[in-house]
Length: 321
Image 1 (cartoon, one colour):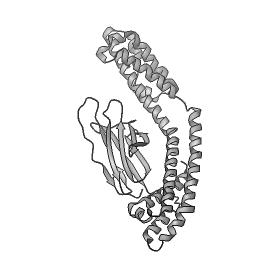
Image 2 (tube, one colour; image 1 turned 30 degrees about the horizontal axis):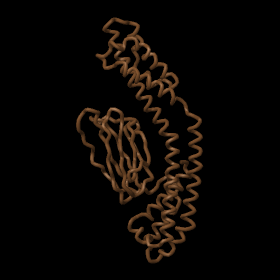
Image 3 (cartoon, one colour; image 1 turned 135 degrees about the vertical axis):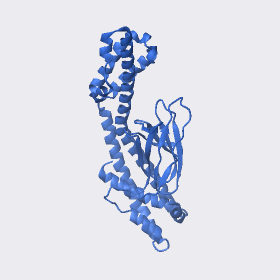
Image 4 (tube, one colour; image 1 turned 120 degrees about the vertical axis):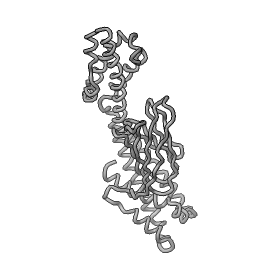
């Protein structure tokens, strides 16, 4: 979202949060007109979140997907390069050893357009000898996997025009939903709130305070964030973090280089965080959020076949963010 959209959505989030606070909900839930307006409001909020998810799915996660594909490709290439060097040394194949003497940093720093060709050079060099490299844990299957990784990464190089089109359409959908929701608040909820000005002044004042559009970029909602590690406290990059509410997937992100993930603009409800990464046991944590807060929770993933392992206990921290 752009800055103006974010400011309006922050206001909407804050207003809805006040309305849905259990103590306030008791005040209006016997008013059928108010209940109908809230049903309409919540439905449009779901549509807004869906549009925002579509926007994110066509931008940041695309970049993250390519980054994950690049990481997979480099790991597979380095495995076969090491096997090539080891085998070459054992049979005194100078040419093979030279080709396979490639550093991980050179692959990491290479331009995306060149990486596929660099990795294919390793594939072509070790392919004739793959049947003799079992001692280095490579074989025809791992070589096929390397070729698949090359194809996958090459298919992600560049920014497809379709991605830009989807992003633009999602931005327009977000604008339309914001205006629809704003209209419900202005024309219906605001007018219904007047009856509570005297008898439920705290509710009334909290609602209209939330209805102010602030230009600080902050908002009042629930946030989930934390870090994903492997055993030993080493950060895991590109782990998939899926956030679900009441059993339905809401959003997904990949962890950053330091293992960090973050979800914002969340309300009250029953949430589940699921963390997965190839080679590690998938882990899940569930949360029941009854007050707006910041939930800081880390995960330690255990490598497949490594046995048990525990996660740090979630630490909810009350916050206005």
